[in-house]
Image (tube, rainbow, N blue to C red; front, side, top):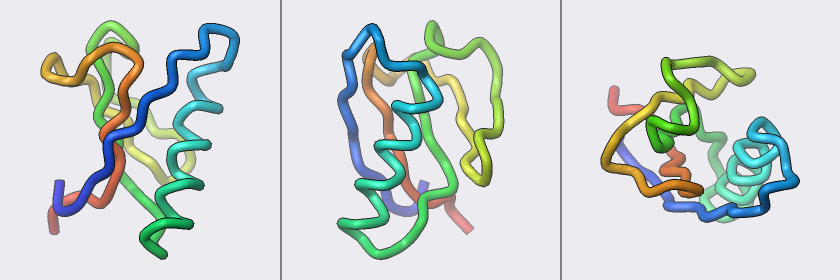
Length: 74
């Protein structure tokens, strides 16, 4: 990942897709660019998925309920 932001969302009632969307919107507002990559705990998703233009990838080093969202390395 070229540039990322760590986002916490532990609201059990909020759907996973909404969590990624909220993190992406915040990232865009803060950094002025749309993120295209997001790492999440491997218990959150078992394999890589695409949510719109964001590639979501499981990673065991990410804590539960956290999202490392940003721009993929070129």
